[in-house]
View (cartoon, rainbow, N blue to C red):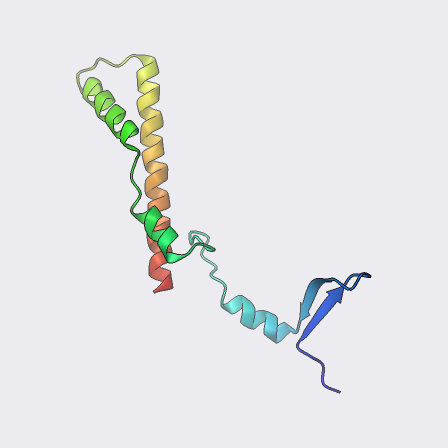
Length: 109
């Protein structure tokens, strides 16, 4: 008697609710799953490319330029300094996301 490598867990109503794999099949399946936590899995190449090419929204760019110029002249108050710090943090987050998208695209090649 040959056992199928895939066995299903079935609810009383007949609906398949789970699957049981042989250990070898499970290990083979896991071997194809990326383990790098920086990879953006589940996105297609177009989505990844859009992220990689992403830029700070123009309204933030304009405000950033204003704040940086005024900061150079020593004219920022505490609220504006906090706003500048927040914009720089957004840029850092965006750059990290872009880097992850580029890394994922290279992994897909």
